[in-house]
Image 1 (cartoon, helix red, strand yellow):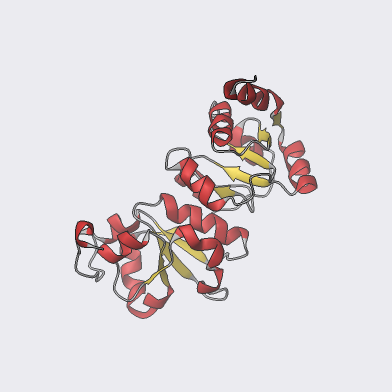
Image 2: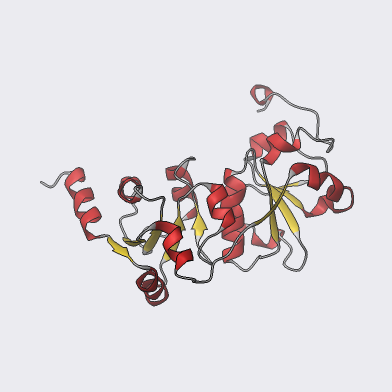
Length: 229
């Protein structure tokens, strides 16, 4: 019998480092998902167009399982340098064994090759304070329903990240809109998915609800989660 660890070693050996030109060619030819696992701030500051962010530093495996619905879809990786093997192993542990390559030299190699890259627009929470008085219907909370029920910005909708693949029609295509989570990790995941679907008018609120709470933006009265049924 072959042990799971031996299978993982085979998967790692088969995954190739790819220079930017080859990475781009493979992405176009295979229609692979480009998965970027760097920190959310690094992704926001620059990423390959249409790539999806799910950072290693957060709840990586659960969000991969919730949001990448096709286990057999080929995956190309953008990782911090030195994190390539760890990423492949962590994907394989939850059943995603179709990683076909990673960007050699990390995102810097892509940027240094002068290839096109994208960014995520963001604002600080205190900037939102001046916007929300007239545009509260264009702010979206991607935290879990329990977090939203416990406390949220007044008049803001709950659009949990867990259900983003079913709820694209909730977001406007022709107006700038704003999204937040608790601290910034999940909202960048959401922004990356939205941008990959053509919603380039999305703006991330840096620091999430924790930062919003430090402003004068009106929120609902806090309800202790332990009292919720």
